[in-house]
Image (cartoon, helix red, strand yellow):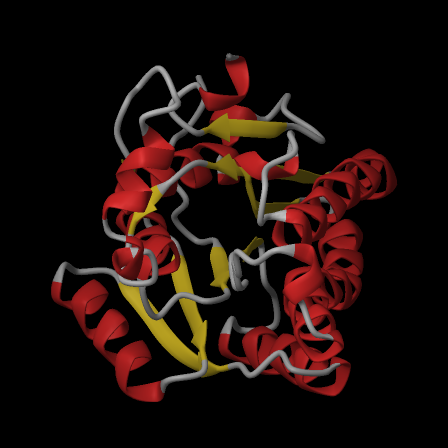
Length: 250
């Protein structure tokens, strides 16, 4: 019988101080995982940790800038130490999502988006996946987006960075899967979070294009991550699971 429990597992969630990351951290903790809440803001991070502990879960905050490879490697070391020598589940959630016409994007903006959305994920996997493979088990979940699957005005920079994540997901599945590490992604649709609140009615308009006709709640995305993290998805490798209200189906 497949166990849905993550008891005894150590999970690192980047960008976990708010939104989808915070909801994911809480959901993983509810399944018994020791969750490492990674983010830039210690105050918000400790608030997420406190909320998890108040519900009987186990969590710790770990500072994470992710602005360069040295910082990524430091996060991997800190997380491994806090996790008692290992990280079993990695959720690559941290990212930025600027919507801007191609001709308006500066070189600095381009570099910043690819640094966080692609480069940081790449080197965090490079740091943590080999140890998972050595132990013969692990799960990596990359948070992607519906606009990595189709063209949309104003989303060339964001969408292309997440399309790279989708390809990396498949490449890493092929690379680490034979050694017991499953790598998958969640293709997220419009979701109500603190970060998307400024979009206002534009968020509803974007969501209205999908069969579900509404934005997701962060907890709905978190539920998909929990599925991919645990044994219930033991035969799922290299998938980009659409959790977008059906947008990529139409």
